[in-house]
Amino acid sequence: MYTQSLDVPDGDHSGKPALKAVARPLNEAELARQTQLQTRFDERIDADQKIEPQDWMPEAYRKTLVRQISQHAHSEIIGMQPEGNWISRAPSLKRKAILLAKVQDEGGHGLYLYSAAETLGTSREQMLDSLHTGRAKYSSIFNYPTLTWADVGVIGWLVDGAAIMNQIPLCRCSYGPYARAMIRVCKEESFHQRQGYESLLAQMKGTPAQRDMVQDAVNRWWWPVLAMFGPPDADSPNSAQGMRWGIKRVSNDELRQKFVDATVPQARVLGVMLPDPDLKWNEERQQHDYGAIDWDEFWATVNGNGPCNKERLGTRVKAHMEGQWVRDAALAHAAKQKARQLKEVA
Ligand code: BYC
Image (cartoon, rainbow, N blue to C red; front, top):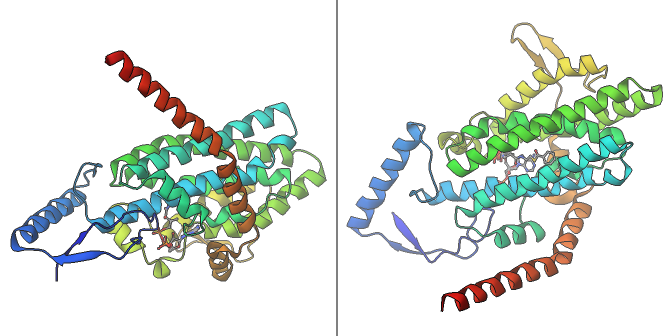
């Protein structure tokens, strides 16, 4: 039976309603209107037109977008931590300036993405609350430690490289604000990937100890980066609907394959081995075969039990609490400005 949800708080970024929906059957006129809106929406999706914030959209489409965009935003701001750890230890002024700019960019990506998600009717406070209380997901990759300076280069090369592969198709996402935010994000990610690769090239031209350090970092990051694209298509509950709605354009497995094929020649130029004995060119498929990903490790990390989950969330909550006075001061200033303007008008 068709029903209409009444007064359902849209607060939980996870896409699941925070309170139980109060539903009543739709009358005939409402049902006809609902069907018309749904048909119009489907036609626009089929015609590859953008959906904008003021447009009607099915609740499930809205919730999927809030889930994905807020997870993406959380990944960006949590993703500042592993590299941020190295800002004070960068080996030269040049590397420090580049790293500072990169980490600031990630913060900026988080802000664009929270703004894009806010256009769907969920507030930033609600999204951050979900993150801080552990209800929200963020990318598994940021729960791994950065043990040496080479890790910073490898994050740029592989993690940002994987992010670009995933995010270029999102520039064509059916939801306008997300697609537009992605264009700028991708341009910046491209600089991030190149600076990482260039830093690794310099280290590989250094001493044997530096080359060993790069190889060790590649060995530790390779498999978590492959898992970052998400579960295999056959085990990906959100993929089919995400593709139907034009949110996802390319599947998890296809993106992973494209990433492997693009990265193998880059590893060769760099002079590092990718730690997979099963990695080889398949003449018939014209793609690389690669070994089995440890999905148990992936799910353990996604579910809060990776190497650094507690540390990452703890640092984020502490930063938020310590920033309370800034938010209070900004609000007090805005209230003062408004009062002054009202006085001038009166
Ligand atoms: N980590 O049905 P699936 C960056 C979850 S930041 C954790 O395939 P979907 C950067 C998934 O959410 C890059 N969870 O889902 C920043 C779902 O759970 P829920 C971040 C993951 O949504 C700083 C469940 O597994 N990029 O580049 O169709 C420095 C089943 O998955 C992961 C984005 O966020 C994961 N890796 O596809 C450097 C891109 N993978 O929500 C770099 C935008 C899957 O149902 N997001 N899960 O409870 C996407 O493209 C898609 O959401 C995903 C997953 C491909 C990630």
